[in-house]
Length: 450
Image: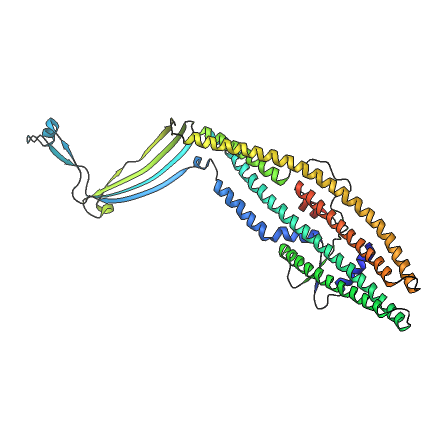
């Protein structure tokens, strides 16, 4: 069976005239897909955007430096302070005026303030690096999920394409046999040993195979175009796929080692991040201590030339500020409740995923064993059918049987060949599903020695 398929595929490849051909194995195609895939590039940007949107919960612990400057003009008159009673009488220089006005400043004013504020005590300092690491882990895990999906589509498309090519080889092989049989029938007709109906029936079978071959070719073209898109291959280059449909992705006895899937890793990181967010929310009510400084300069002038004619005052300060949150309404309570609900939801999702993955792996292992057993059974059956077809061919040439019996025997062989192809495809797809569930698909293919 493998020899038949290899011969057919070789003929199929060499029959593609007028096109240059590049040979690729699955490992090389996977490398190209993971390096230049649009989906992964988008996922990488989305991961960075998510990290920026979530932000560093302790970013406010960094130094805050600001500079402000302003100019203002008293349009009507300079503000005054009224000294009354004895103070007014003294300030008025003994004139006896009880209410004496004094201007506060000059008409034109300019201020410049360079401020620095640094938090020197906040318990959130201690969880800063942990929070940054969890954000990075969450982003990387989400990227790995997308990478796993891309690897899955590449592998499934590749093996579906190999399956289609194998079917084309089977069709080509059967057409060749029917053409040989047609030559025999025509000789028999000329010798009045067969009827024209036998020739017409063979012609009908050949035309049916030609229609089927066109359908398969159209499917192959679509799959090949998608594979080229995924792997960034030139669209005008015919691709010869080297990795065989028969080459297994898993060992006959799969490893029982427990592997955490990318989805499970993402949920685990999300749970850890949620715990840190809850802790940070609770600690937002803890007192904090800041050091602050202001380099504050003020110029006042009776004219618009505030810098040249102004009187400058240096009002710079340096100090400490203790902040003790006492009550902020329901804000803290609502944030805490929201994070607790998110934690409960994440835990339920994690449990559901864990149970679902276990059942999925058990089902996949059972399906894999079923398909492998059916493949061995069908391969044994094909050997018997092939021997029977050779016997029927000789009987037909000796006119011991009619064309119907021979065509039925050939149809049985073709059906068995297609079943073997289908079993091989199902086995590869199940193996892909197993490795995808474990998050090991891309690594397994890249580590494989062709």
